[in-house]
View (cartoon, rainbow, N blue to C red):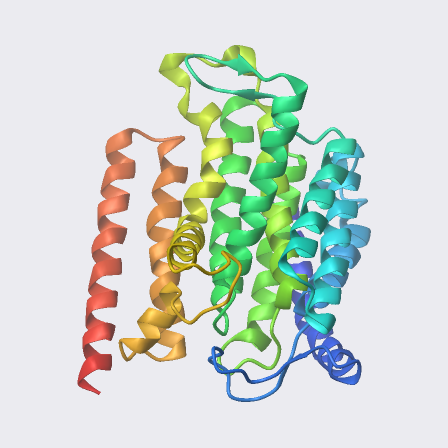
Length: 361
């Protein structure tokens, strides 16, 4: 655990230090977000936040490679994840600067998923009535689908200062706790790619938040949202490879099923926003990728909440879904239920109080 904490602190420190430099570079090359009618920011703001995250991750990998525990995670899988994340970061950089069309970005995201497949990172089985071993073609298609959904869920929620970075940090922390405890309780290797990747995710998000909280000095842009989405998806997929599918039983399916379900639980808020946006735009005859100002965070802002309050409300909503799912894997269901109820009550109390304050104001 100590080495993973060191890894997260290194990633956070590096991202914090590097981000001001990236701001200057982004402004020099014109990678900035102009103020548009549908935006909530009021000043021209640098993009390319994903560049600072990627450089911080790369330097962190170089520094922790020789640690006794974390160093064992470096191998074929991590190489594939690094290459795929580098590709989507570069794709995002191009989009942040030149505004690529939706189909080009979708094709690029699928190509990044293809890089993962080339390195053997794919879903091999599903825990349905025991275990179903997937034919290679089905497993590969499902892997691409998971990657695309996760990337775009993070991308859709990136519309408010500090929102996406905070939600992904909470998601990454929940996933790290699950991956690490799974290794401890069930005797898996603690030096796996999922634990290392999620520790880095938490670190870069925390370091970036110092510059991205309202009023943001820089946005993560597509270079950041696609980068983080791919890392989360990769951690989930590689974690399933650590679980022995033959050990799955109906009585003990929780810890084996959760590697596939947890990413969707911890990203439930972004996923809900993604689904609602696609349905809303399709029913109104628009493209599912057409932007609008009807996302969940826009509605909270319209209710009178400030940027900071809206972000915190959605942080609490995310924790309300993510934490109980992680608890459920290792403790009795009633403990998870109590945790869920306590967080739900806190979430409702904060949401109602702040929304009411905003309406009165």
